[in-house]
Image 1: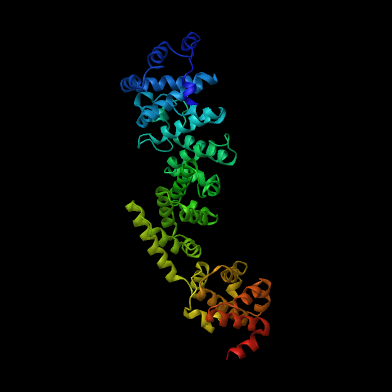
Image 2: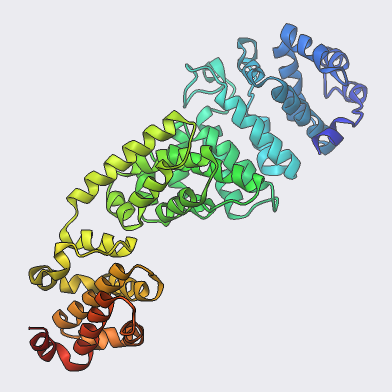
Length: 446
């Protein structure tokens, strides 16, 4: 599209005759327009700020769409050839120009081509500003002049507002969201952008975009989305938002299924940042992250930073597991499907103290135990699952009713014919407790 726009012939002379551009402006444009890249590069090298001034004055004073699109395409072309040219907009000779205003206006008023180019150009110009030109100041010294000038603060807040409106209701079906995420990933380093983005409820708009990617284009979008989440993971108010969303489970799904090194790296670094905060550590253990990290470590990654981050994440998760209560450890064992005869399965004290915790999350642990009966091929896991169900029936006052309601009986009955003696023994115990009730079953067991 930009190439087609650049093929247009713009009647610069007409604009001069109607005083929309100056004689000097016309000379500069004639010298620059439609010339080879090398020639343009030399002109920008010699007289870059003068060209920037002409481009800004056209965008400020001329409203014809074809011309506006053309000048935006020229600026984009100039940045694509050399990203450092964005610094030309901050040249001392342009201190009297409001370099941001035309782009901000076009961002809100133009067609999609104009909006997209304005967004990208603005993001680049803002990122290229000198370090001493911080939030609250306008372009260079213009803050001291009489003329009201657009401050960096205004620009960043307006960009965030536009980003959020696009994420909610994209102006373009396939390009709006990738454009926004691309610019956001470069601007979230700015404290004002982070704060405004969280205030505008932007975090929850990012979360749905964290999902495994299949195509090259969606892979880039996923990477840049995860980059945004990583930048936000350094900012406490954003972390609070992430904690109440499904961000963590989505990040873990992505890292579990991704083979793209840069995606895995940015997700692992994000998880490492979130690990010590709030309840993230316990949730990571619940979601089976320790096993996923082990699987990731077994793969041949070339990136040293990634390997180091995986080691740190693994250590952090181990520390978290050490702090877990006995029931948390038990739940972890069940959710990972790694059932074994660890002491707590047969410890009456464990069952008496924790029996009501089986009711958490709508009997989640119990449901997983019953699923293991269907899905596991490991005889040890099947035997332990049957035994634990029989323990639940014995220690919970409504155990029989609950286990029957969850349709466990049929699954356990099937296992009574299992080839493994340990499985059949524990399946039989479970069925006895289910039919006879706790009192008689414990008598039988004795």
